[in-house]
Length: 72
Image (tube, rainbow, N blue to C red; front, side, top):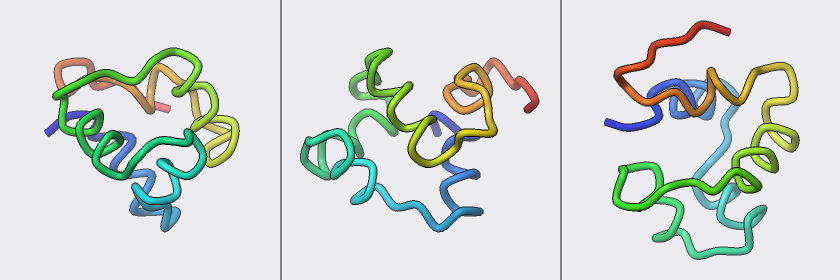
């Protein structure tokens, strides 16, 4: 699983992949691919997600790969 912290925070806050797709102006499948490591989030996308849904958390924490378990 990729972006474990982002997934956990989405679950805690009730944020859906559909909401992320709407914010970024992309298809659900595109965000799903990014979440599953088939493609990557671009820096501007990560910033928009953080600002809109998780303003109190760091980008480093939200987008840490599974081998980088940073804390908030």
